[in-house]
Length: 312
Image 1 (tube, one colour):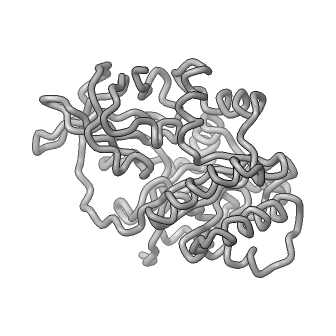
Image 2 (cartoon, rainbow, N blue to C red; image 1 turned 90 degrees about the vertical axis):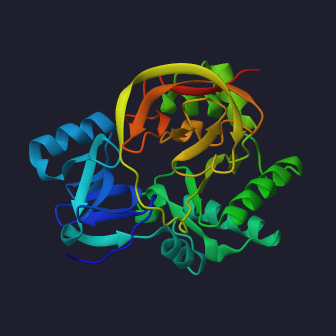
């Protein structure tokens, strides 16, 4: 078995012309947990949607379909021996910073990096993911930055807010928010979605191009805890710890006699609530062999009907 260290937001490529987005740190049974995002067809990389990805693998490469006993869900997984290329966001960004931009997307990325650098950001802790990571961006592509240090991530958010105030970056306009909302297919109303998102300071616009800030904690070395699903649940409670609110998965400690946390694998609910706020949660209750219970929001990729909402 090939030794490889992967993190969420990395991409892995196979010899068949498939690119998967890594969704979890580490390996399970010698396999990288991931989800198919791009397929090479007629020498062109085509982005593939969730349902289409499952159907494509079922028909052509069922060996990449996988049930994760750790996450208790169905997703995709690739044995390390099948990986021909490991796309790493940090390495890709460093290469782009030294190169002449190939298109308007890379030019906007470099302009954004210049603005961040003027405010003292440590670029050794940053990477680029999404379509730019594998060089298949198009003129309408977004920029997806990844921060690998918690302090750097929150510094990025603070700088973004400051640059918007100084009109060097722009906030999302109504059309941007509508498009973002439609892509998310979340269970919140549009007004609730925008209210929650605007206060996170992890999205903005440069030269009419949207960018996102993501946080990946590479220092986490916890052993996986196996959970089993008990069933759907909806409840209201208070958040008593939001320290891991922007992690993947996002994790919020709640004031509840039986349930310790709500965790979210859906980006929509990253950073969704602050310590002291009352929230309503709709998700799947799970329990571990040790009797610990938590609620998962994002038990499937789109997570229909599952949400975290601040009670205003």
